[in-house]
Length: 258
Image 1 (cartoon, helix red, strand yellow):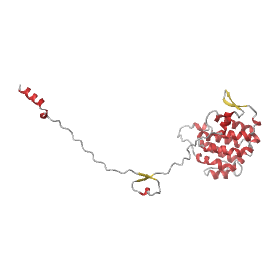
Image 2 (cartoon, one colour; image 1 turned 180 degrees about the horizontal axis):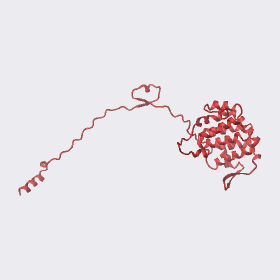
Image 3 (cartoon, rainbow, N blue to C red; image 1 turned 90 degrees about the vertical axis):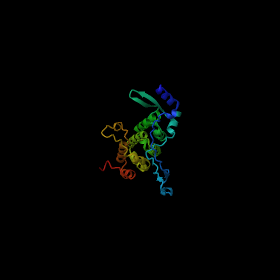
Image 4 (spheres, helix red, strand yellow; image 1 turned 60 degrees about the vertical axis):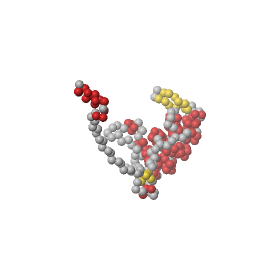
């Protein structure tokens, strides 16, 4: 009975209950207020302040792709002004010409097809690329007088800095040089418009280590294609070709002198 009275008295008086010990949490030291770093441009008064951080220069964007613009080739194709059609073969797609290629007006059609080198969507890029190769194969003496009209489309295609467009344009240039007599020499005065982009991408090769680079087999390696194109320019450009190539691409080594 005495024990029951003690338990009842304890329950009625909560103040007399044994208190639990609570762990004291260590107080964290107050962090000192650090001023935010002031980002400033170089060679300014703000750059001399203690809490300022000088930001680096912006990226040059030499390898950055440029946006594409509507081409005259697409406009003429959608209007149906080209005498071409798409033909499906067992070997793939090819162009069906509605007239003989030798009878085409090269001053009118060849610059338009070269303007289509900037295209990357099907079927425009297919018609432009395949149409150029067909016209260069059957052009003969009609190609040389049109060379000055081809420089701006070639320059525009290379200036896009798109890897796919650059590879296609380089293959076209290699075909253009051997398409007719004196074409290689006629391109020499225009090296200043064509070669600057090649100088930028000349060393762009994929470092695959001990792996296999299948882009070489498919001829899609930009650096190798540029080296082949410069070699073709020197081989078919006459005596002044190497000097002009070396002026625009200082790291180029002759494929004939060595």
